[in-house]
Image (cartoon, rainbow, N blue to C red; front, top):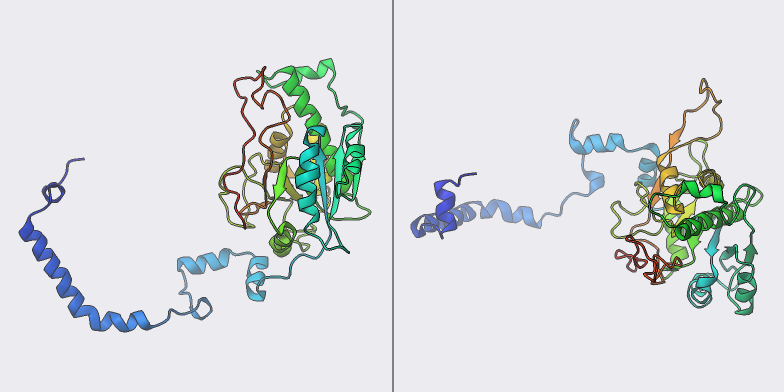
Length: 359
């Protein structure tokens, strides 16, 4: 818009006489108010516990909006670290053998004590990888080889190729088909009703921050108790993020597509696995997890007609900020994404998280 006369003059440097009068007015104001302001500076501000909120104020409204569990946590202070069972499962491929042996598995094992190391399960569809990892002396609880599942083979049939995303090559489709089967089998392998535990799912190309387990147990402690008939106050905790995390540590957010490190509440890993296999071939596994997390979760007590029972609720997705895991490998296992011959227009090297720092 048009500048005012005063603004135009100020942009040119201003009238010296006017500026001088303004400076003198500021000094006069400071002299007349100094005796009142200085004591106020030395007075310590009241603590939040001693401040009374006037009815109808914004802060008062915020207090009313807080949930019962949030207000209870504030009264009790920070809870003790979560002491329950956390079972780590890694969906592994033979391409990552060296990274698993020299980086990821040792970093995970270094967290535990000699008497109580972390429970780490490696799940793979490769027939030789378990033997190779054992021969390398890789620190892990056990390694499991799967052959796919009924209705979810490791290799798609010819009629399955009609599901391909337009523009995807056959090799890319086969890659994310098998990756989905590997992810689902890994989740089901460790999420058992016989020995309930939180399931920490990891892709085989990540590395943890130092003291990852202690930080994780502190992070989930406020949300690890039963609530509203559920085992915890979250369904999935996202522990890896591409770029900057947009929510605070432990806060709820919208899942984008970061499946590299996810912590599932007991029983929820199996649900995600089943839903992923129901949509096998529709998209890469991270896209499937994103779509599943954005849809309502059925807690299993509603009939098909929806006449009675609890209506479906939204998934509770929380985030670690800063993340506890980052990429440890430069390139994807898919040749096209690694930029080798045959790459399509979307090909690119696997990223490293820009937001990762020592929490």
